[in-house]
Length: 107
Image (tube, rainbow, N blue to C red; front, side, top):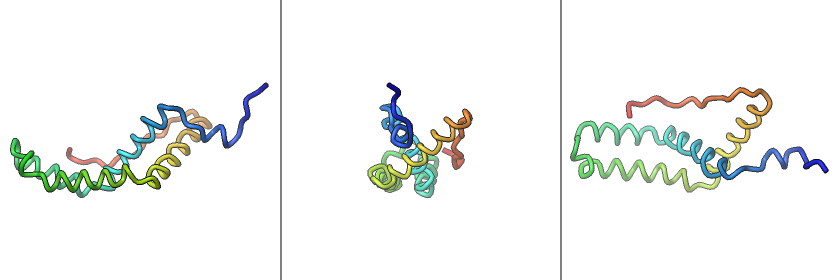
């Protein structure tokens, strides 16, 4: 007997997709959405050198709070999951992997 095909089969996720690929999209998008805090923390670190652990606490906390806010948001996960499923569907249809555009920063 043939396995069922259709939308239900196409939306099933493998372990690596749930635990690696979708979280990678989440990290990339969260970094883009928190880019102002990434820049502030990077600037502070460059200006203070070895004392960054002490002097950049405020920037580090703001950055972590922003990133964790996105990582722990179930609706953000669902958005990233939908983005991944769309990419996967396009890849399966064309055989061409689409690369995500990333914001370039001086990190």
